[in-house]
Length: 398
Ligand SMILES: Nc1ncnc2c1ncn2[C@@H]1O[C@H](COP(=O)(O)OP(=O)(O)O)[C@@H](O)[C@H]1O
Ligand SMILES: [Mg+2]
Image (cartoon, rainbow, N blue to C red; front, side, top):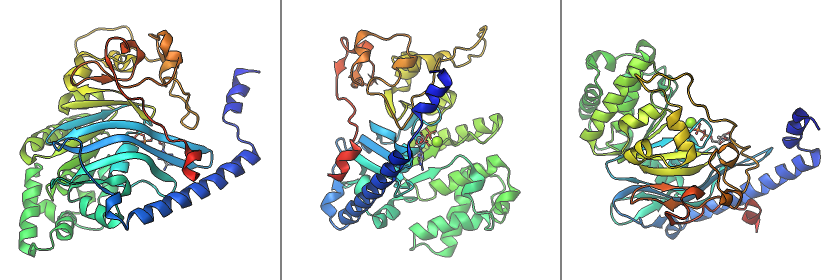
């Protein structure tokens, strides 16, 4: 069989198989939605406790799947990490590795019913000794959290701002919604204060402008003002500078860094750009094909990368003042998300395989107090922890 027809076959689905998938998806989505509705009625099912009260959020073996017509896409499959109070956690990885799905799971903004968090816990610290398990939290309770305690800055500010309302009104709206006790004057005052804080010099003028009258960088500043308006405990910034040009990128990053010290909130910074993370993050989580392959402090990841993939990423980063013939490139591609292998996902691209790599997906191995890696090369030298637990979707119907 030629290479091409082999490739075709691997993604080929017969009519019978396709019918089976659609039938299965319908059953599974109905069941999951019903379970969600039931969980809403009982507080015990979503009130829980933090493992460590100094964390704002703890992800604990979270599995978020999409039930699509070509099969189940395991977009995020058994990831665990935490976001400590007042710190910046950078989530890096190439496009499609599940970064946005991780943040959408935390906000419960997945495209339902096809997108579902089917396993694990996402614990959000309420600050009074209790925590919500976001996976089961009812929508009404989520509304109190979104925008107020957790807010989000997206990649493209023009699509997040409403083109027919003035900037001032859009910032006001967030405050009105979450602080019904504030008077009109107080709200206006606070909005102007926020605009000033994000470095908009002409705040009175911008207050009356429409989004199209502002440049991309200014719009992103307004988005940051909106995100910060209610002093949230966590800000999720999903590729906040990807749509901006390089000089503006630097300004926005400076702004975020400066604000971070002022506002005492944590930032979950999602990006495919290692430079951005190196500049901003205290902790770094590296994702690959829906799983975390390495995490640690910024120092661990940038100066002592352990996973062959992270090492490859570092090598493929251009360095100012260093002359190279050509940049390093990691051969091969990410496996098909519908049909993941049951060994290490990076094995087929890895240049440093050991015997164990042919076995089960590697466990999390602790190689220092802060540094964790999922790679068999450290099996004998590190402290071997848990294996990521995938959810068997057939089991969901039992
Ligand atoms: N609504 C959806 N339906 C089906 N698959 C999706 C959906 N959203 C995301 N995915 C899949 O989930 C995986 C992770 O996507 P995403 O988190 O957006 O990646 P990124 O790391 O670039 O943010 C991708 O393989 C993508 O195809
Ligand atoms: Mg994304």
